[in-house]
Amino acid sequence: MAYSPQIEFYKKRQFSDKINATFTFLRENAWPYIKIQLMIAGPILLLTNILTNQLSIGFLGFSPEDVTASMILDFFKLYGLILLSTLVTATLVPIITFSYMKAYQSHAPSEISAAMVLKNLGSKFFNLLGFNILMYIAIIIAMFFLVLPAIYIGIVLSLGSAIILFEENNPIDTFSRAFTLIKGKWWSTFGLVIVMGIIGYVISLFFGLPRTLLFSVKAITTTFSDGDLSAVTQMTTGEQALSILFSVFETFGSILLYSLSYIAIAFQYFNLVERRESRGLMSQIEGMDKAAADDDEHY
Image 1 (cartoon, rainbow, N blue to C red):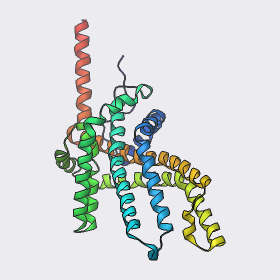
Image 2 (cartoon, rainbow, N blue to C red; image 1 turned 30 degrees about the vertical axis):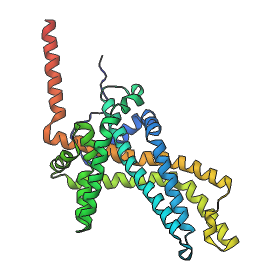
Image 3 (tube, one colour; image 1 turned 45 degrees about the vertical axis):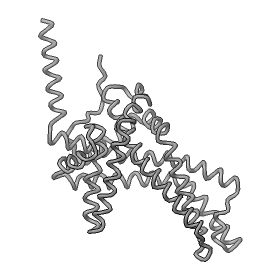
Image 4 (cartoon, rainbow, N blue to C red; image 1 turned 90 degrees about the horizontal axis):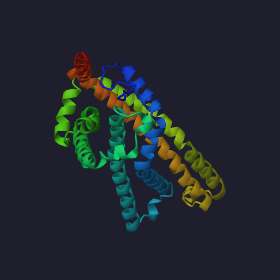
């Protein structure tokens, strides 16, 4: 008997229904999905967290009079690595998320493996990477005019990764497809992105709490003992080990943050496609016709 997923993808949903579908999907697929994300995207997310924390610590010990050319060069190298790793993360995580969702349509969560997800990685990575680069350029150009156009374009193009993965579009066609789908539904998409972003941010704050407490205590004790906040950057071996451990913990939170946003975007994409093209309804009709044809053959 063919597997039938519990959650119907191509379906018209109201605002609250999309949020409920996001958490239902994540709850039903929690371990297999997060495990695959950790296996594939986990290392690059961990690297991003470590580099970002290094940059933050560097700012704590920053003193304008001690600036040298080599320090400025090191800063730009570190910042460049963070931008690159962030761009790769913004490409990897949605590919894994949507490839998992595609596999979910024909396999039970316990049957979905990293190999099923990875088969889409090579063919889609550069398409989505190219789209992300074009999207960031478009948003930056829009910001030269006003902030509002940049926000508008950002929300429209948030559908891009889902379009590329589910429709196998190229980056250029994805732009026009996103504007077509979102017509009349920009505000609901904006609201969904904001709400899920806030929820994900609160969750990520929880996973970042141990590091915040570590550096808060160290900053207070250092200030009282040495009177120099820059001494916070001088970490003991034990503190460095804790910092790495907390980076691993934050990586788990980052995956949840990204996942909530991308899964919600996927359900908005399914909702918009169904409203415009009735893809889910047509599939049900085709299924009924096929079942009727099979019954006729038995007679």
